[in-house]
Length: 294
Image (cartoon, rainbow, N blue to C red; front, side):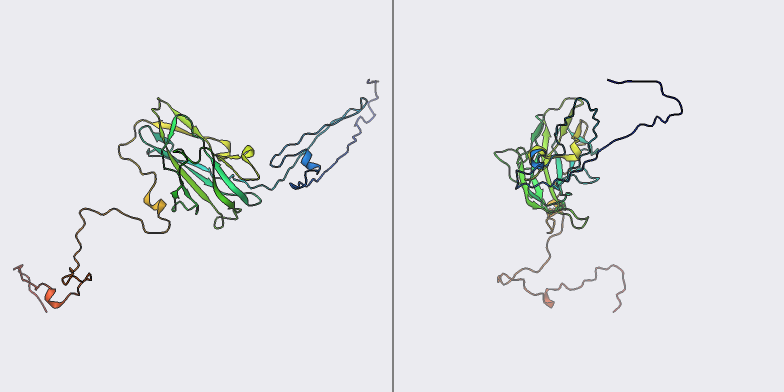
């Protein structure tokens, strides 16, 4: 109940402020389930539940700031989209309606501790068909050493989640940053006009778990529209350079290339016979009207 009365103007009406600040620094210990914080905060979360009680004759105003530092690995790459579109269209944001296109996923750890048993999952929408045996992984992160990553029962290994690394160290800088690349092909299934595909991947490890998996591109799906007027020339999605792994790039022979003019093995000893003076054809003046100066 409030009692009010008229107060002279000369009396200072600045209210008295009483407050109490309580600060708790709670350390999480995953091996000690009896600890105070373990009862209120689940590892990997940034929220807490608590109950505040007060007497009936007390007006209670409460303001809480909660900071939870769990020191987990973090798969959010600063200023970079972890998931990209690889397309045969001249417009890199469009997918051709009559041929496969691909997705590429980059995995890096920008957190506070190494990641253990890193998993990646990419569930395709029903309107996209996975291209068998198209999943590849580049554990160097360079984009030049892709290797096959086998399908599971004819389906993409990413559909139900696949382990891409036992351990993934923390990214320190541009030169010291362990990185993993994944890519796979899909094909539109009779897309209607103005069709659009949305796709997102999940990345997690033993500590973050699938429940709190990181969603690529900060939970923004890669949205792909369809190009119904792609050129007939097919743009190669997987180039030979991307699978070279430091070796020579195999280039197909040119049918018009001149034949080998080395000396044949005359005596059939499986070795090239050395060229002698007798093998050199004599010079013949074909009457070109030139003066030869020796």
